[in-house]
Length: 104
Image 1 (spheres, rainbow, N blue to C red):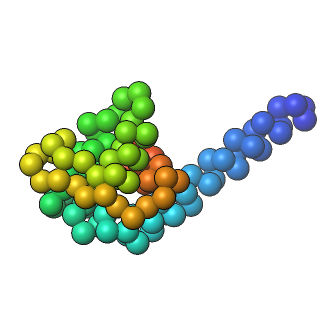
Image 2: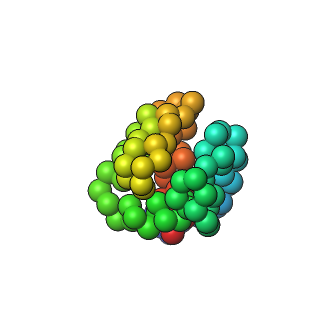
């Protein structure tokens, strides 16, 4: 019985942390310049984050790719308007990329 109980408790704990992690990622998003050009649901200067999530859904390496775009900037993926580099750490870029991909 305890062999089954411990994994179930661990799974329950992990699932309960997901909403908190999403809130932390959203707060991080709002604390960075990202929100000046992006919105979750609608296109602004840049694409809606849900559009980004849909474009990269199921793509291998999507977290690393988006984290690189967030940190280093990019141009040409969504039109002529460049996305400048953002003042984020590698870890923050990864958190933001994972959050964006969860917005499907």
